[in-house]
Image (cartoon, rainbow, N blue to C red; front, side, top):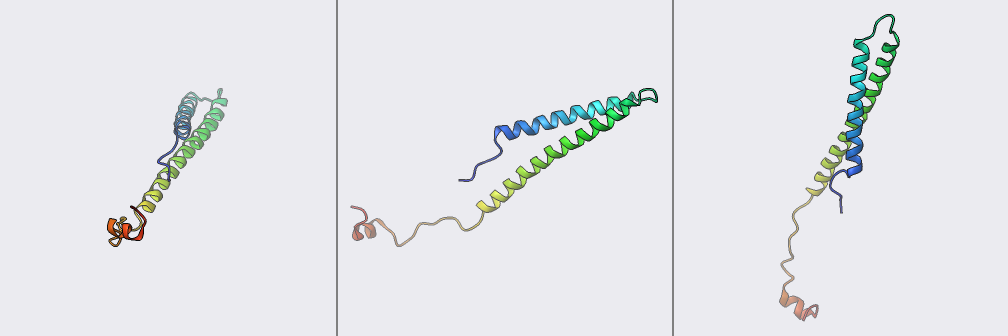
Length: 102
């Protein structure tokens, strides 16, 4: 049996990555907006948090893409072949004659 979609742990991991990525992006934007020559450290903080935000969001989008691509492959696999049909030669009378059923 092929399982349906991602489990709860994967969904929570992706949502947490997106939330932290957006939080880091917000910190980077605030740090960059308040940076000056005296507060040059805010530029360093902005750069590092922006890199962390990009990394987290890229990882989350990559995992989402992986789940979507897997679902597409599973659906393509399920669509393969013809629909199952019953055999016309096997009837109740034929099975009784062979002794399979009584």
